[in-house]
Length: 241
Ligand SMILES: C[S@@+](CC[C@H](N)C(=O)[O-])C[C@H]1O[C@@H](n2cnc3c(N)ncnc32)[C@H](O)[C@@H]1O
Image (tube, rainbow, N blue to C red; front, side):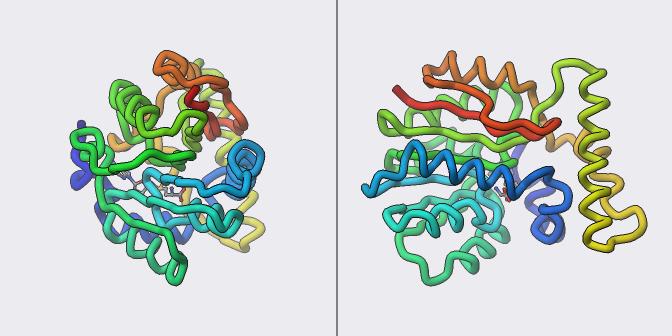
């Protein structure tokens, strides 16, 4: 498993660039967050206390949304980047029932540092940094840390099952960024290398949606499905028991 400290996410300049521009280069980011919240409201929000965990939390956007939605939430936020966790701490300042853990997925897989079970485990745009074998291992670890009836949701990039589709998905992505840049009044070639970076950089190990859905089913998750998809961006997951 590639060490977190050797990934681009260990570089604060890189994490800053992501925070400043994620709404431009993550296709339908806000919609995917809406879907995550609708899922939480529908399947989990029942007035009782809920333990949630965000894996690869970045600046804490997901926990922030869930804590605003449900006062009964206790949140565990995990990220390998101290810089990202600092931003998450800033975003969630003054909110109770939040804990922050600086750990890489590699460390979480090696030793059980979580020490509790969760009702909802969510991850956004982070698990694609793992190989398919590591994803399987992480899906198993997540399953073992869910309460019965708990849910896992992953918002992530996937690869297309065919080259022709891949080419179109990359166009869809470029069209989205062009539209966003135009409405933000941005000129020039900014972000023109995002797609190339996504495909060429060694940190990114996206796998097909089918492989990941199969891995979830084989681990024992129920009601496994893709809840939303737009080109390479997908929202998928399942339930424990
Ligand atoms: C694209 S950002 C997404 C952040 C946030 N979840 C969001 O949706 O805005 C990916 C995050 O995953 C974290 N990350 C990447 N690889 C990781 C690993 N191996 N272990 C722990 N965190 C990791 C990065 O530090 C970064 O905060």
